[in-house]
Length: 455
Image (cartoon, rainbow, N blue to C red; front, side, top):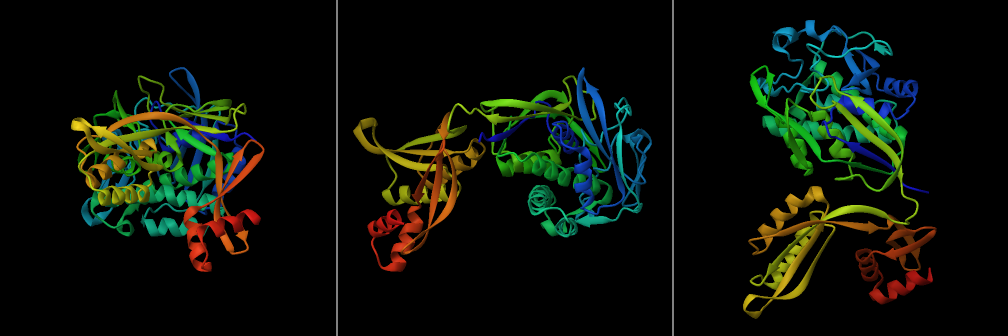
């Protein structure tokens, strides 16, 4: 069966509401989605799902409205830590930072929350979903949000994905403010918006059942966004930290304002197996999710849904190749460097004998990694070897689909890799597991392999 693929085209950035809109626009049953979201038992909000248009392109927009906050955001007045903020006057929403007491408010600046002056709001195809009660908006920390998600009736896959995404946001906020993750507090208005965006995204991804998810290079704007304590440059600190932690590629465009929000950054860095051009796939559908602002370019997130080309029995992706020639590095240093790089997530590390200038015998260190891990691998190469320069290039590769399995042998269980070549299956014992089993049974590695073959 062909691999099911989702590809996120982030030409105009990505945010939580854009993601929800694009995934729903792929044809997901909206009523089923809302029923699943009800399992979270989060009150005090309602959702509006509507059709809109951005630069002539039809798209789906999802708006999360917190009860007690009027939908006409141009007239909203929020009370945050006792400070009143008028959106009409300041053009900002509930993304205020308070550096006192370590409180961090959700700051989805551009797409989800900048609904002021000229925002599109078509009710022709409006779909509202309400959760009443809760008009007071206390603070919630990450532990509160984690408890809410874990205690819900959402299935395990949805809960775990949502927590991983939220964990990225919390970790970034903690680093920005010099606090522990548990000390990070989200103001209720912002927390509700982010909870719905993140959990909703996890629900939709689970409903779409993709085998692989890829994304383009992330496009960001420039300039500043206004917050309670002044201006923050774009990308805002939390977004920067999320992307840096994941090694995600970012390119700034000549567009004023924020295009990648912290929630959007956390979602795509958790979902994407790799960033780059679209893999070879047969397109079955395209979802268009709208942001709120009107930009010089269409403010939409485009998500392709399709399947890998069935004409091949293998997958295709891109890897980064890093190389350095070393003529003044000892064998011990080279061995230690290999162990460090592999432990850090390198796909492969190997040495090739070469001759350098003045006929010096030397070694070429080659490291294969995922493109988003390139900067981290380069730092380790500089740190653990004597190189003063690293060559890098991106290459395409074809790989067979594989999975980890455990195989029973007369000597005990052994870990193995099951590889698929069309209808054919191959199983290869894992070396480290075979060595441990040999030591446990007092046998040679050769005997363990023979035992495996007989099983």
